[in-house]
Image (cartoon, rainbow over all chains, first blue to last red; front, side, top):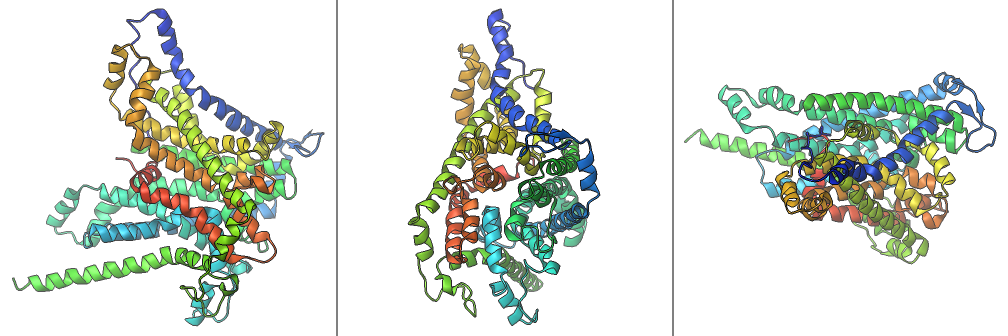
Length: 309
Length: 283
């Protein structure tokens, strides 16, 4: 998200005042469709959700009542909300770290100078595959793979890693691990491609100079590669953090937040309040809390981006 | 010369090691996908056969046949293609207009709009879902294509504008001046000069936009109701709810559901990756 470069002012000196006025108004004409869409479908809805969050009996009932911050207090003090926060933090934290590690390892492997470009292109294609699937497809595919009599259990039991088949997505002690595992699988290619582009952008002179100085591969990795990748890593990790805290579809289609709320996330918690329990007031308060969390993360993201410019 | 041999051996060993790791990695990345394809060709009774077989013992197209012969399921695909293509076309037009203003003009609201467009990307879909539900019902757009198309544009536009503005910024301003000298308007500059030479950027943005629309789940789930309005992601989920699990059919639908993205990827790999990583990598 680069800052905009300063544009030259339209030189309307030679033209008359009419075209001068037209020139001044032109940019507004060009941005008008965007502005209308953003106001109607972004600003107004945000104001609406904040309004709903202060009221009772909204949307489904005809007599809305102002209740102040009651919904916020209810939600922030409820155990189910705390559970959702803890689950979301685990899910997001583990995903971001694993994405980063797997993405970096794969990017380094794909950046090797030991193999030909053809071979590397084939592997890169395979490694990107999980990225090309819709969340709905990823969810259904892993439900098949992780089913009690599915292939993952077959491999694990026949290699004696586990004693008996496990219903990964249906048992309270495994479900959160299982959905996190699925999310890791589906998300690392984003890091891998970005880091690979980053690796290819590191000037080779840096490595050559380090080689001349007698640095071994590990030293070169720690003192050149990692610092050079740092800005990419920071902005990716923040973006991923923002996206993963918002993950809904994967959870909804694999566990629905269950069993026993062990995979309940902020998104599924909010969705259920609204569309299963029809408590739109509380749901809006929860949605507003999610918004605040995201905006705080976004603030750090924008700051990290600015620091890079 | 004598120490050349161990060194060459060392290199060979390193090469074998890297290759081994790459193969192991591709098992992790690729096996689930292979399993999906293989399952889509199995009869449903063989899905959980013991021991599991990657190559189906009996291959059948019945999973695909049930999809193609059921008008409701075909409709999922028609809906997804129609919505995604429309969103892509509209997003491109609106984004090109806005990006032109951002790239070529200075105007008082520019800073504010720019911050808004960046900030908007961080707004969680779940936050917008509840008011959208109210708004879309209010506007009479519940369970319509228009409702979904407009909704998706809110999510595709910001990124599209940021990318297109970046692209336009790389194009020399002398081009604009040349048109102006010939008496052309800014409209001419944009559509006759800038757009034709921005095709690579437009392709990247278009692919990214199509992918967001094609993959969207939450709003498709909430803002449509009848089965004729459902898109592929919801369709896959609906198959899951029906009577028994028709796994081979669900896998066939998944294979069909990822074909457009795979095709885009194969044909436009460079643009694809360029578009995806533009947010985090800069040159």
